[in-house]
Amino acid sequence: MDLREALREHGLRVLLRHLYEAATPEAKRFRYALLGLDLLSIGWIVAASFIGPTPLVLAFDVLLGLVLLIEFGFRIAAAGRPLRAALRPLNLADALAILSLLLAPLLMGALGFLRVLRTLRLLHSVRLITSLRSDLPFFRRNEEATLAAAQLGVFIFIMTGLVYETQHRRNPHIGDYADALYFTVTALTTTGFGDITLQGETGRLLSVVIMLAGVTLFLRLAQALFRPVRVRFTCPSCGLQRHEPDAVHCKACGVILNIPDEGRG
Image (cartoon, rainbow, N blue to C red; front, side, top):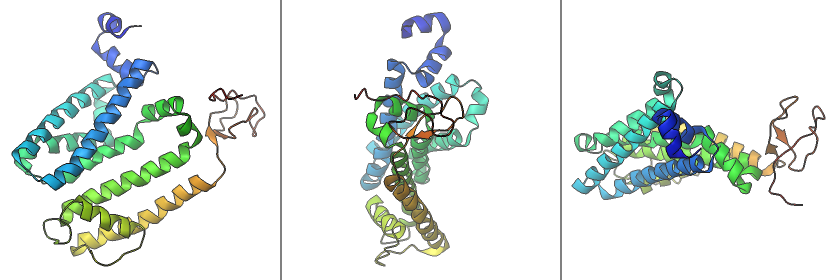
């Protein structure tokens, strides 16, 4: 059904639900556009830390916040139970991040670390992951490794934001996101050159969290990279989800599988 016909016959809410949940080409393009919007917001967060709170930067903060607020409203309206959807932890974090952008002229950069919470959407958008799996052969073949790498990247970004926001006003060694990223990566890999250290109890606690979580995330990524490749496909009989890429039968129950492939003969 054409989007304009759906809007006329069923209303805006049905159209929004179609865009956020359906598997049609236009719905997938819409969700890829949302991913691009998320990447834009993340890039802006990093870039703004180097520029500083100039009037132009603050104006773009507000403009970006308005765009994200509209998208947030659409996403909540598309949910089956809008109130319950609005109270989900990820959506609450998203609302705080948008609020930090809208109030940027008043906050003057304070609480900017709330914006990095938007990166959590990159990991928890199940529909987007489904779209990637169905559209990109590389993602289907390397889903576990891709998700593990994405989790590691998001963790690094969040920790970098926390390090920057808690240290740049009182730590002369943390002047921008580059300094915070440098410390985060060296702490996460337990390299610890010692040229930058975090100050205060909060800084020491952050260092411990980064090191402990870093070992866990690196181990998960290594396991995903080096263990045999499996594709994710739910067996209709027993529910087993991971199979050999060329599997014809489920190794658990023997039922015939119809795993989608790229048509290679």
